[in-house]
Length: 213
Image 1 (cartoon, rainbow, N blue to C red):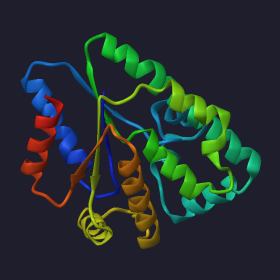
Image 2: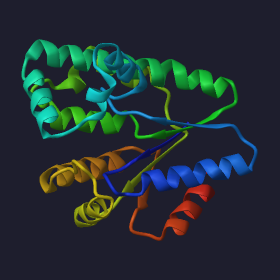
Image 3: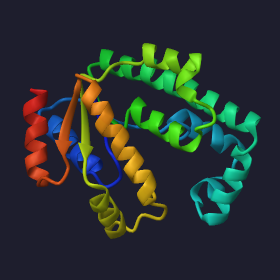
C-alpha cells in the first residue's frame, strides 16, 4: 500500500493518477482508496440509509450551519467519531490487507494521520488521539510501504484552491496549522518521503517512481 498526504492543492490527486497509470502500464492491478474520517465508504453508506442523496450532495452554508449545530451535542459528536474510527479500522485493518493478498496495489489518497489532523482541528474538545479505539486503529492498521507527504507554502495552497474554485477552502489559519502538523509528522516518522509540491509535476512523478522501485 502506498499513501499520499498533504494540504489542499499540494498535488496529491495528480500524482496518484500518474502513479496509477504507471502501474497499469506495467500490467499491475491497482486500486485507489480515498479516506477521510467520517467520509470513508462505510460512513457514506450509513449516511445514505438515513439521508436523502440530494441532501448529501448539497453542501451550502446552511447545511454546514446545521451540521455544526448537530455536532455541538456531545452524544452526537462522540457517536459520529466512534463510528468513523470503526469504519477506518475495517478499511485500514481488513479491507486493504485483503486487496493486497489478491495481488492488488492499493494507493491511498490520505492516510490515518490526515484524519488525525482533521479530528484535532474540528473536535479539539474530544482529544480523540487518547481514545482507546483510536489507539487500536493505529496499532491494527496496515502500514504504508511508502508514505509520500507533499507540502507547499500556505500562500500557494490558497492560490491553487482559488484556481480550482474550491467551494469551501480551508482558512489561512487552518492551513498554517495543517502544514505545521505535516512538517512535524515528517520530522518524526522514518517511513515518510517528503516531497516539495512546488516542483514540476513530471519531476515529482519521477521522484516517486524511483523511490518505489
